[in-house]
Length: 263
Length: 245
Image (cartoon, rainbow over all chains, first blue to last red):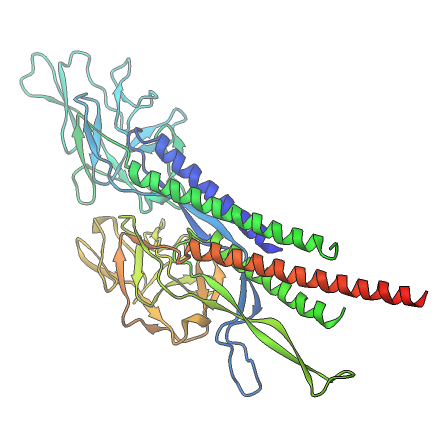
């Protein structure tokens, strides 16, 4: 009886759905986190009677055939790439991207990771680094004598140094864009790495065409909407229950079969 | 087996087929663009010669499955606000170019691939009026109009191809939310598209659960019939045996 295995695929899919929603809710306050959505698709069909097959010698066609479905599968867990709200922090090394683009981070092995979480800090050597201590590319060092640091919308890092009237340019933050952001591979720690499906990063200056601008003293909140997350959770739970009802019903039918002739 | 048991068997098999169809519908309650299906049964008449004491031909009706009826009603539209989520209002299908030729779908959950083309979940390019639709990084925010026109800050980029068929119930389900057909695809006249939305499955859980209960009850009824028939045969044999001894 295939109803049992079909309902099992339904339960597995809804379980994935609940896990994705749980991860979204857990990351509700994670800087730069993007909501994930599980996407489903139907599984292969068994053709018992092909639609459009002839039903008689005089060329009458079956209006619809018999195709038996075999359930559902998770097709993808996609990320919703909408902008999260910008929250003010007043920390000079907190920067948010308003619009498109990722900060490029140099990992200890020399490869690059990308992030929307701009909660940066200074390293002991004065370099701008992430919370894990990884330098933000291209590598900007703020002199220890600087009394204040300004990062403008174009990503220029300017430091006010005693004895100098004008703020001094220390470096330029860059943003990277991808043809398919959804194809980036999440590494945890708010970091993503490039994959064959994301395409190669295309670096640009903040504020140029297609790239976002930098907001100093702000952080991008996660774009998780708790209300829609909870409603999806309820829907997923009910769908899970309904699939388990099918298993119970199919089991009852099999039991009846088993009891046949024992009257 | 005698005729009663065979008639019962035909109904038992029909109940199993109904249950499988209901299970597939409920498993796909969250599958975008999914269309529910219900098996259709018909009476199969078998003419038998009259046995002793009967006059005229006796007809016995079995049940047999003749097709699956696809419910073509639209699923409800979920607003997602994702730029490449597109829902179709009205009859029509998106065209995707797969390795096996064009396939049709109502699941409008698209994204871009590494070559900037609009693709479906399997990575197959969605077809516009002029083939693949390629978005440039400089196009900025993408707007998809009701007629399927895709445009960015630099103007029109392409137009989503929305097609319709003379008999869309005869489209063959391929799995992966795709349909295939040998019918000619016509430009859909009355379909409009909505950006930032997804058409959900058109399964109504309450209907499926009610059908499931009905199938279970009819299955129990036929099993009871089959069992009592077997019992009366047994009793007949027992009584006959008693007379002879």
